[in-house]
Image (cartoon, rainbow over all chains, first blue to last red; front, top):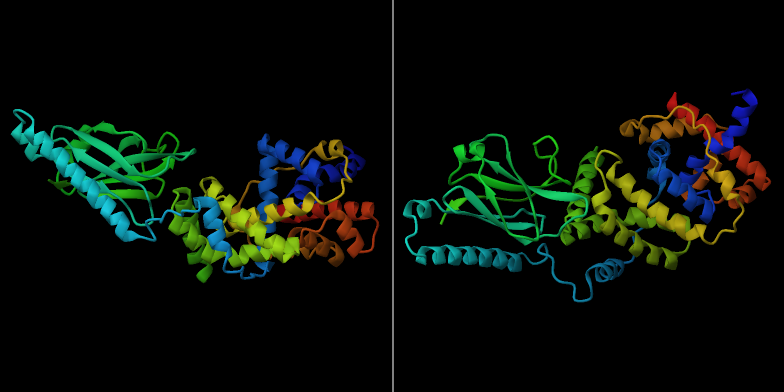
Length: 233
Length: 183
């Protein structure tokens, strides 16, 4: 490329920076935005400028917004009835969890009434309520005493780009994956030999938020959104 | 510095918003709304418009929270970018169309593609230092575009130069800036 070509190319080379600065007019901005989304080299150029210019962000002076803004946003997002979040009403949330445990107890009670229950299996039944502060994801886990955990989500939202993954943590060892679990259906998870070897009262079940398909390397990468120790019932 | 703890706490609040935690959203708003209101007000220069825009900005943040990838941007930069881009979208539609789309889309030879190194990149001293290598009025024009959302027309008026001169200035300045930032 000649020196003259390089000179002429300056404008074109700067177009991604112009996009980040917001200098393009609406149609050009949209068209360039589509090109960036479809081209990893342009994405890299975009991220280069966006992250460097963000070094100027501290020059934006904070200005307190009026107090009536947050309620307006919450109404627009969560509806006029504004169902209380569990953060706002821990008591309500606790009663939900307690109710869930009561349901579990009833479920176990029914199984006692079944003809000829395997008494050793029954003695080994375990239950866990999985929850975590700051998260509205809750699961209830019931170990049937013979090798499988039944799992029901009590609350939580499905997310387009993430899956929930169940882990067993026992005896101070590393978490052992028990697979991706759905939030909108009941599931039964068979205990693997690795989980079964340390399984018992005090084992902890945890649910983490992972990329679609589960943690790629078999170790948790996302935040724990629910956890609980299993106890005899 | 307190910033560090702030950063990880804000990243955590965004992650919890992705989990639909409304309490976390409220905390995130409490912690960051003054900054984002400042960003939008500076670009929109109209209080009533900014009060509407800030609502839309936080609605976007709630809806896009699962797309924030920790480590790619600092959480506050990500939030500022959502606010800044939203405000720019609002001012952009009012601007006269003055550019040839085909010319803008003829993206040629970007030169060496820099690998992203966020910690370095977001260092405010780095960009300030490289802006310092430009002539002062040209550095001002770049800052005016980023911080005030000025268009080419506004920049040309403020600096009393013809529109095309401003375009040439700025494009040359951006090429120089890239050289400095990648060296």
